[in-house]
Length: 284
Image (tube, rainbow, N blue to C red):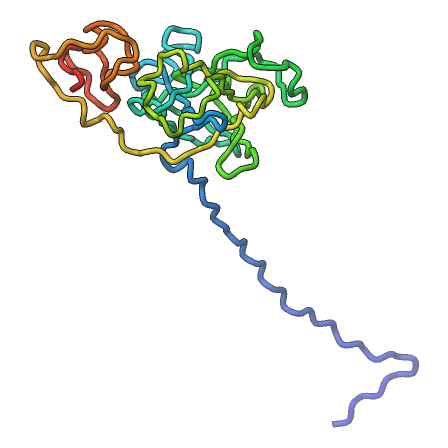
């Protein structure tokens, strides 16, 4: 059949443009980022300058289930953390606990579940580092352990300091650095020599506005996830208990404690049931 002819001046119809089928949107690529190794268990927090370990000096009672009961960080339970030459009774073990804020963590004592808490002034120092000129001024307050995160003072950031696993531990609330004030002598090859954490070498750890003499640099080391002293605690009738040593920093498993039989018998390791009488448990 012949095609119909076009009338004078009539233009042929252009073929309709055909759009290629649109491609399906690419599925988002989900990349699972592994959590840092130091959030997976316990860590030792070691001073780069003298190899001493951050150590919890607060009460033995675990506070994870009663957070906020103390109501603040100025009470008698909020002891300054110190640096010690060894991991006495797992008190140098810490857990790095991520929060909902990117890069912000809680630093929790493995022994007591208390949080590392900044007690220094509110003013942020990130833009004026070094202005205080050292770490012995009125602004250099001891960092304490507390039962809760009061006013965000238990929030910290781990800022890499250049070497693997080495960080500045920076307070979120005022940007001050966790800072070691102990002796210069390195203790890595003489661990345990001081036999406790109440001697003259176990100084309070403070917060400072700058990294003076590298004393604000800390190294994270893998910790032992099993409480070391657990098998050392056994129920013994008080009549069979040995007399406790009386000297501060004495040798034996009581290093780090001072006092008479009341303190000796009342010390209860974490994870153990509360006895009817404090005299039911002693150290062998």
